[in-house]
Image (cartoon, rainbow, N blue to C red):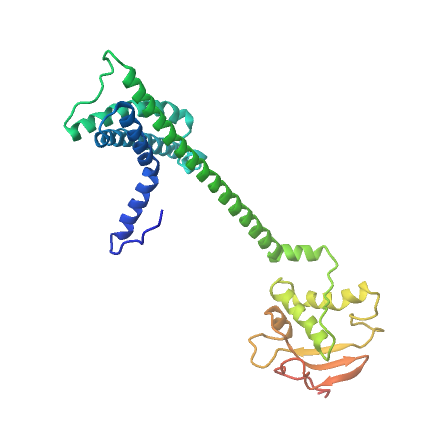
Length: 318
């Protein structure tokens, strides 16, 4: 079937939805009614047009009853339990549809036949209490066959919809579980508790170069302090004292007898931070004004690897 473009106008979307719904409901009933008309007109040598009218009236009446029972059963199940699978798949189950199938076949045949009598102005509805019941039995068998075909199609469509709904629900559950796992991994308190039970070291694999490795360490300290909500003092210890202990180096701790390695920091010019530690807490890099290694001043005034500090250190004593 070639899809037609949606008609224009304010009421066009509503009419389009109704047309699509009718096509989905009648795409089985109409072909089966046409085949039944061809078979019956050939079998009983009846006029084709009149047989087609009867076939359509009977077939559509049966399908109307089937759909009424299906939607009614689904609505009843949905009122009892909105989350049950039959109500989501638009199929109330064979316990309900099995008996309703027989009722639809019998009532739909006689109701459709009476409707066709009214449309044609003729009287061809067979009396179920008449003498020769063989033609009536054959027609009822055809009606039952039509009913079974329609119900099987609806059942298959409902089962496919249920499987698709279950697959989508499983995908949503998997995505939600993955999202919750990510959230738990990024949860600051979980990160803090994990770090509290481990010896945490801060390092970097940035390529060598003037100031690149130290600046990488500073950025990791700022990341842990801001995103991980770890106190900047502890983040600094992870990059200094913890590293010295892990590698058995006499560095990273300020105390008597150890190497005099000191870095003097302050917040950068224009920063909203209060001081260097607050800069780490906000995820900013502080400005370096002095670097002392083994007691020897290596950088004085300001470092070329960070923005200028708001206040630089001085080597004067007063």
